[in-house]
Image (cartoon, rainbow, N blue to C red):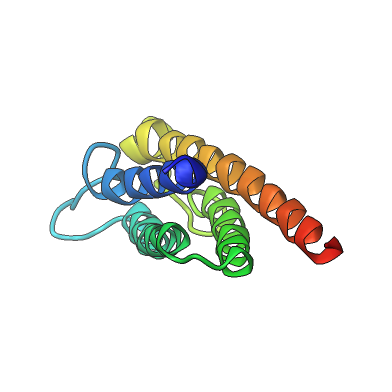
Length: 136
């Protein structure tokens, strides 16, 4: 359990990103029977959140240090990319007062940043551990 603290933290953060993006910090809803652009940003964040969650879960379950490190690096790269989805890769609504700007975008950036930090530390520690085992 102690060896998987970072992996568990990564999984919980990825789940928070995934579940939160469709519940408590979701983007703007349907408007007059149509979805605004921010809906597609929400879908992209949710989809990548699912992949992040699956990768973090595999990172916990697998035993091989090299594979665990590779998964952590993948989680790091994906979480950094999620930071740039709202309002960069996918445009949000025109009005800055809309929910997508005031709730969704800051929440995605904050949670993805935490996940990037966790997985970045995990990746570096894994690379150091792999380097030490190669020296022996």
